[in-house]
Length: 434
Ligand code: URA
Image (spheres, rainbow, N blue to C red):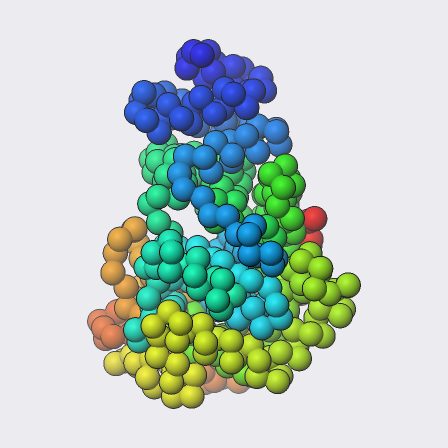
């Protein structure tokens, strides 16, 4: 096969055969194809796109570049959840124990946060002693015995994705739907889940700011799941304002625990139950969504989801006393309040700006590998639609470094749009793709 001919074929808008895509990925991985040819190939995909057969073939080639997990011998439904990333999105921390408490086995491989979006591994790292660097055998054993395990991404799985992502990052080819869809789905498929629920965010705090783009991404990922034999459902959900009230790792863990106790914010609880209900039905553990929602809500009320979270924390070496004594999570040294200077209504709350204000406080990374302040973050006292009196607290800011407060406060103040009435309504659930 000829590399140049493959690049030309894609450049001219033709459909590549699976063997050509496979050949390209294999030879890029082993160094036979240099970065400059791979960059040209990515740019050709960026402009010409890929059809669903090509995208599935690209995903499979990336899966085959490394180790994979296989849970088929367990004889139970094994599921995974993925969010395309947002601000204040701690859904995974609530959803996974909730699912496990309802008979769904969950094996999740997660990443760290980058930029204004958070990551599950950082959140779990707030819990004293919690281990996210599990070996393959520890991970498999915990999935088998407890029915729930989370570990951080390992270099042995989907290594071609790591190489391609690094190249996309420096060649302006990150935001291509087939490239994003294959990158995300390759990691889910390599991790062995048979049932996948995707939370595709749309709005200012999301990767896809536009709802139509988010829908296209969701359709692409669901099509890959179908082509590769994984039952996949996607919900398209709003990320115009942060999810819940807490933004920042430590605050988000506290909010997740409160939600597992049935005391969480309504948007977070609703989204968790909707995502979970889709999986319960997909796995055959409920006949229909209404029944599934009822089961999940009952597990939040009767303490069974919280009990599963406790077992999960203990199994991964974490201190379960944080469930009763939140001060054991540590606390930030400095705090400040942002107050409103006029009466009115919160008409807008820009999720991206809130996320960036949290990064200024130390809660997020500007680049991969940066260390972060796990206790830094923002607690939102007011969200869209809330009415305000002059002097009310809009939000509180937390950090270990007092010098970070002023810039973050300015950024956060600019995130709030105060009006006389909400400019538009903001439904959380925007669509569903099966
Ligand atoms: N997340 C991924 O894992 N891959 C992408 O390409 C974009 C977001």
